[in-house]
Amino acid sequence: MFFERPESGEKAILVHMDMSAKAIQESPRELEELALSAGADPVEILTGSRHKPTAKFFIGTGKLEELRQLIQLHEAELVIFNHSLTPAQERNIERVIQCRVLDRTGLILDIFAQRARTHEGKLQVELAQLEHSSTRLIRGWTHLERQKGGIGLRGPGETQLESDRRLLRARVKTILARLAKVQMQREQGRRSRQRAAVPTIALVGYTNAGKSSLFNKMTDADVFVANQLFATLDPTLRKIELDDVGPAILADTVGFIRHLPHKLVQSFRATLLETTEATLLLHVIDACDDERQGHIEEVERVLKEIGADKVPLLQVYNKIDLMPGQKARIDRNSDGEPVRIWLSAVSEEGVDLLLAAVNERLSDDVFHDTIHLKPKDGQLRAHLYAQNAVLNESIDEHGDMQLEVRMQRKDLLQTLSRLGMATEQYRVEEVY
Figure (spheres, rainbow, N blue to C red):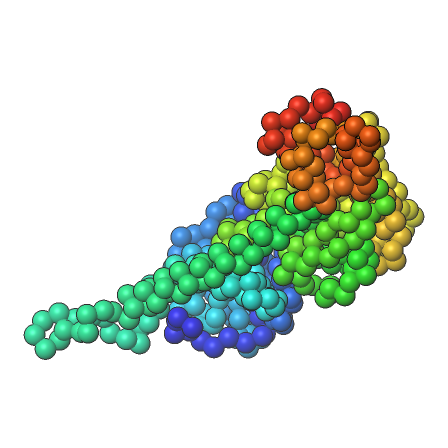
């Protein structure tokens, strides 16, 4: 789009370098999965090790020559690096190998662009792409001369590069305005669920851990499922019924990945609010993955970055059908509280245990009792009815009201606090 570059194709050479710094270490297997998810055809992977990247090419000149020879051998049309490259590094490598170069961030953005289906998702992806491209505009239009000075040599007053930047800023401003409207609509939906005291359960986890498969089993939905990274991009909400809790909302969210580009985290912040404002998180984990612990730590890091690390969490170890001898079970902590479920979304073994554990975790936070009100407590009565929390009501001969109330304990505490009423009077105590 913004550059004069060799046209890209699907036949790709992958480049993975083992770095001594753990902070920038990536997985070669994950790179291959990302490339396949993007529709590329990896024909070779070039590996090596470095203490630190070089400023000019990221890799050394020897590896660069080896890469050029591999491109000629396989007639490859695309090179994908398993690392983040600077704009200068991309341009320098392309100049030497005469082939399209894509880094890890660009590859993930491309996958997101393919997966986006809703209006909001497309806007979020475009915003992330524009912000990523803005740093790669320098010398992008080499076919146009720069503005010149002197008599008879003055240009129109704006170079092509400046024009591109101005158009890009205008488009970003338009997208941000549209996303703000979408965010307002989502916020209205969340407020209505809060008023109705409906808890939200959000599925989170590393990409391809099986969140969508589990979502379909729990809700009888037909969300797209595929054995590929980022099969689900747009969040999906469905209503489910829990025995001791009543109606609840289950949200399927975008999967996380190691070193998820910060631009994507920022662009999808409105979507990720479903996670930060959830009542309970279900952290879905691929139980048979060799890098399971690393994926768990990465998800926990992203949750902390978006401010969701304080939300109550239940770990769900999925895909036990691929682990011979592993049975579905619930693991509990020293207080007897469910903290980990082992199941298979494919065979449905253990899904009933998950629903029971979710029901148990949420019912601990549900107030279900009879509240006695005086005629002067009409304002509290009105608030409880507005939140659809009153199951039954009776009035005695003195005009006193007995209300059978069922709602989230925290919502009842907030209501009493707003009205300046003592919680002890209504036998409502906060549970820690």
